[in-house]
Length: 552
Image 1 (cartoon, rainbow, N blue to C red):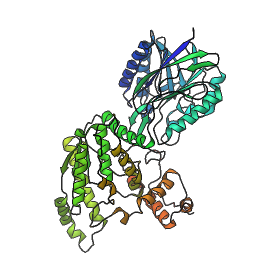
Image 2 (image 1 turned 90 degrees about the horizontal axis):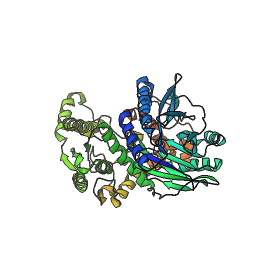
Image 3 (image 1 turned 90 degrees about the vertical axis):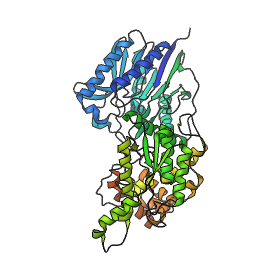
Image 4 (image 1 turned 60 degrees about the vertical axis):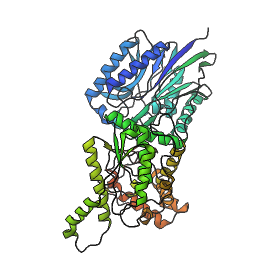
């Protein structure tokens, strides 16, 4: 009779710091694994602590709390499947990123992460000691190797595990989403399989923590590096995967494979899930935003409605003396299509009062950006008052292009606690809005159909803070601006590189200067969804005071 080994994959969403709540998720998954006759339940990297815990792991009380909960979880394995789950581990005065193997009612062993990532959003060298490369762990009839996340992106750990007798590789991950990430994961994991002739299970978490979104999309590869199992992206799933012992070694039994979404859908889902997770994990239910009738605020309204439900989203139109009738109509059309509440609070009176108060000081000067910023800041003031009064979290609506060049007003349109568009360039905002108009998915709480009118998509962007104002009065056309910014921000391109691909050198230098000069604003900006490998969060750590410019 063919020998089998069953693994239960728990692709779940932990909450940072909620050790008891995360442990309850482990217990519930263990019940399902036991009912399914599993030999091993696996959960993601650092699951019990939540990921990333950052400086929480520097608190000895936090690490000790994790250890106590691990011991309690170990007790439930006396008559059931073993559990493999991530959490910090203190040993001999050092702290490790650990993967705890619980079996037979006790902590059997803790595998320590060897390769600690220290780039992009990761700072693991700040917190953890690199672990020694350990051998495989016997679980039932199988010797399992546990390379933890980054350990599987390099050949050394998997090679050592293979040489010391591992038969299956299980890779627990806290791998945050960015565009194109799944192809990178697959490439590295296929390489490990081919190099070591060993099947592999890649388990990733789902959910959102601050700016990072974990997209799941866990999978298994057979001995030839072919996909044997594919879990869906972003959804919490508990799945069972069987391995059969063959003459060539243990082989995963092929299962039904989820189809992963397109890149534009992945981005939109990431923005929805990050906002949904932020609200759920902070205990808030209702959102508030200023709805101008422009594309950015319309897009944020759509994301909020899909994340929280239209009934939990309040939109506020704050017309100034320069607000067009078309903008009022467009804001009403967006709120109506989404089914969100729309209030109108004119700023004409407050603006006149501020102008009157400042008139003695401003006498003899001409109106300029100062008066424009007063309007933006009055809007921020009024929105924050509504937020305070009704307990609705204020969302900010600036896109990555604006944030990059500082085309936003501190304490004005930058007011808010979260920004779903923070890592989405302007031209991608338009493309994503068109996608949302044409598609609806079960995970969306907003209505199906066109939710952003065509007129919003077609009109020239404008802050409407002075007569006839257009964004292109102050900025290059967004198609040009976005390409230059993509080069400077996401590709580390030199000025000469951008000139070589057709951009005017004066425009490139102007954009570069605006980018570095706006750093002080970004340091005060709300967190927002990370969609690329170079978002304005932990990926981008430039000094505020910086006089360097590319001399090339």
